[in-house]
Image (cartoon, rainbow, N blue to C red):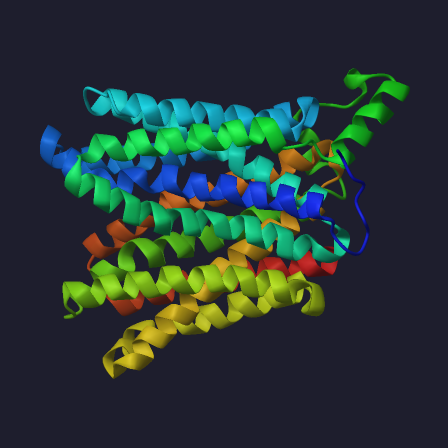
Length: 407
């Protein structure tokens, strides 16, 4: 039975939909990170070079960017629920087929298609959580569903290491595919379309039908709208640009700076664990302080901390604390932008708008590790790298400040 949206409190039905969106993002985290957890085994079996492995690892990220960008118009036309379920089905089937992949190219294609499905699910989950939640709980609802991705990556890591060591890397994809298809079946049975989209469909029928609403991306850059679209997309690009540098390179840079491999792994874990706490802090504090103001504070403080990470590592526990706080602030900033994105667009163009913003963020995640690698090859020091990425945080803060003045 469908229930209306209470403007203040949230019903069990509404929380159930938000919980489903969180579950789907847990599955997304598992599917996306499956390749990272099996990369060494796949490389050893097939004798891959470093560049081949890099392309394989990037395939799902490229697919996610395309899924976020190009699946969104279908969701604005046919509904958020169908797009999300199609994304789950595609990623689940491709995870299963990866079990039988015969070479680099077949697995790379399947990873790209998996990412395509995941990208559609990420956008759909974000918009559905926003539209099902009451206005007073939207910050928390969107933050909670975004936490699912990091949780899925963590849980998936434990599952993947167990299966990889006992059964082999193929079984990681087999298990992931079965879990994803289980999530798809759950969505088929329990996920419901948002009232906002259904009401939009009724208004279209009463006017001149579907053709009365332009289904391209030009509306996102119309006068009065582009001042929200461009800062959001660029800010998320810069935040993800920094986030993936920190998560991808911090362990390696710590080891290169004289720390042990154990210390490097511990640094990476602190960043990840701090990230989930940051998303929750954004969700809980957004309604009381304001998402925009809290987001601006997170980004500015993280820019300072990124400049202090390297010297702080020389002081033992202080380095761990700085790393934990940096991960918390970065992931909290991502959750904050995920919360602001659906607010910036009307129902008719919301999924396209969110898709474009998330695709820009995914582009940042694709470019970031490669950019860091080029700077390292150019003999940049660890301190120089963290300072460079701290500057990108300051640019993001400027955009968020300008966005707050427009909103």
